[in-house]
Image 1: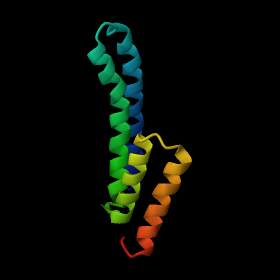
Image 2: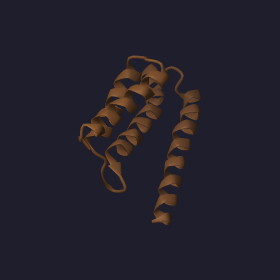
Image 3: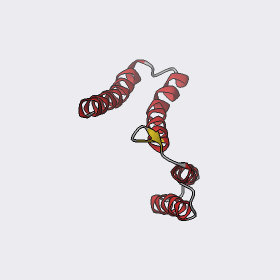
Length: 105
């Protein structure tokens, strides 16, 4: 289990580094292509959203529960609406805790 965890962390770090490195390297060559510049800017966001989605849904190889999913989704919507980080974190935490208190795990 530990080897798999270390391998997964290394792959995530390598993928993140590759996105950042190749984004800056390719930026020099794609200066006239607005469409490609937008694509390169969005690649990092796609990586972060996918990691957050997997962390939201799974915990120890099993479904994490509806309370966590709801809290993370509400926090994501608030972050998209540009609410400050303290409000996003408090809302996500309070919604998750409230749903767990109500018995929705």
